[in-house]
Length: 102
Image 1: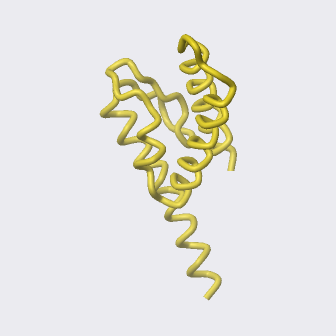
Image 2: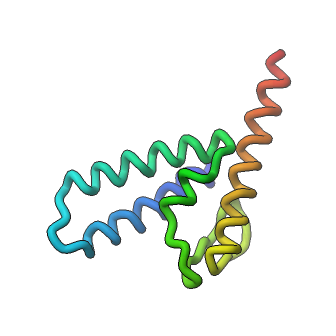
């Protein structure tokens, strides 16, 4: 799937930007942030969006472009709903594959 790498790239850029702008930040901070992103991304594709959503800004000016091929969403309420939807799409796909395996 293309959406997961795109979402991951977006979040990594946001994490790198936030860390780079933090006075006194260290390379370990970036490593820790990337670990959090990886863990949250894994949860997202298993249908659990909360860890991934926790990494996002919850401000009114947060913007998500794409979100599994969707439209541009602006504002935390809309972005949050879109991330819930994205997680449900992955979850539905995983459940479909499981039911076919049996």
